[in-house]
Length: 85
Ligand SMILES: [Zn+2]
Image (cartoon, rainbow, N blue to C red):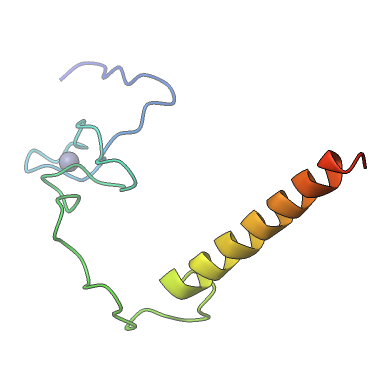
């Protein structure tokens, strides 16, 4: 046992290990868990699965639409600046 030192701010997997302690591996990028605890590629629901959709604000389609709008605003703003605005 002994005190465990975890770097402040460092992301950790945190899944409970067989020893009952939190896993200290680093999670896979964009994921919460390390590759041993559910972060491996290929895990999770298939693309397009709607089982957990509640309001649709974060579906792939909604996110893409939001990105497109954000880009349009960004480009419009740049155009205005180029015109001396
Ligand atoms: Zn882990």
